[in-house]
Image (cartoon, rainbow, N blue to C red; front, side):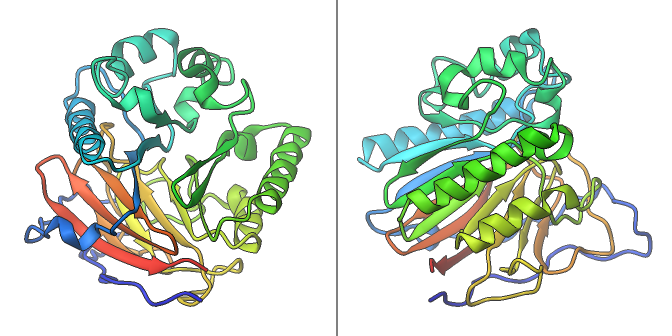
Amino acid sequence: MRVGFLGSIAICVSIASCKPEEKTTPPPAHAPAAQVAIAGAAVLIGAGDIGVCGMRGDEETAQLVDSVLKADSAAGVQSAAFTTGDNAYPAGLDRDFIRCFGASWGDRNKRIIKVLHPAIGNHDYQSQYGAAYYRYFGSRAGPAFKGYYSYDLGDWHLIVLNSEIAARGAPSDRSAQEEWLKMDLRDHSKLCTAAYFHRPLYSSGAHGASPIMASIYRILAAGCVDLVLAGHEHHYERFFPMNAAGAVDSLNGMEQIIVGTGGGNLTGIRSRLATASAVQIQGHWGVLIATLGKDEYRTSFLDVNGKVWDPSGRKCH
């Protein structure tokens, strides 16, 4: 059974227009790290929309992730890094990965690349359906030109999906990913499960909702997935837990968090918020850190200035 969530306060000020406004959310008072820690938990840290040559955001988030991973390693905490797609701008070419992603999150002197489990995004996909993406990440990106896979971290099962197949793939490819997802959920019996990919079904950002993800969300909800992470939108947004029909369900719903703040150009929030949007943060590069306990999890947004935003947590079901 699930319990209620914490910190569910919308912090984006509404304006008259429905167009996204590139505002900067005022920072909160610094929250102590103890608010996001669970004894004995594994740590998952990452973001999406990352590698842009000539901008500082990806280098700053890389430094942040690397410092957390090194501290966890020194403390004996099991940890892993993730991406929610759009790893290398502008077009996911080999040179984009080498020059842009490689100079930040892909820096071989950093710990990130050693423990990274990426997802593909639409910019990565632009290069021959992700050919450069698969060449760069190799086996850690899952089967080439499929890009969906799963792994375990501590007491959790983690599922990585290819939202570009859902958006632009052939019907046979969409069906194959959905059947694989159903089988993966059946074959893994861990109490707590998270999934991540690029395009969110729900969003208050510039792109808006991605209804092409609806069937994936229904499968995830039917499989009792607890947490969904996405990118695509260049802001942070946490939603109240929702059921397969999109209705708020704090007991058995699935929580979605957008964290497309890894280094790409930051974009704004629409004044008319998406249904069930709980917290919105715009104008800040940063990453999501999730502490994954045996039967619960806690999350927070860490910005590149060291501030901790939106500490939250729930029980798995």
